[in-house]
Length: 88
Image 1: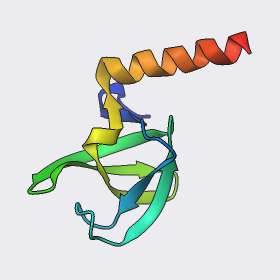
Image 2: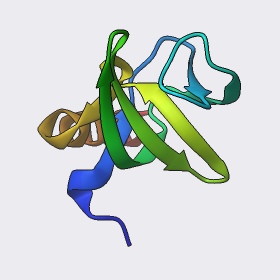
Image 3: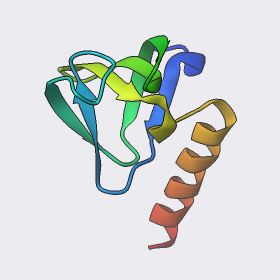
Image 4: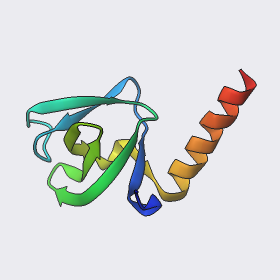
């Protein structure tokens, strides 16, 4: 089971590239769509900003932390999506 503090929610227009290393120049190993839930394994800060090492299904790699909601923001976003689904 995942600890809620280690869970994030992708918040990107379209999709978010998952990279082999924490760099925009690194090889893309997968793509995650907005509202995809990810397990955050660790974080890295470098000259290109903040990154999370994540897993999501069979995909493992690094994503820019700017596009991952965590904590209260992730909870609010998940709740809003569930309410929208109930309405439609």
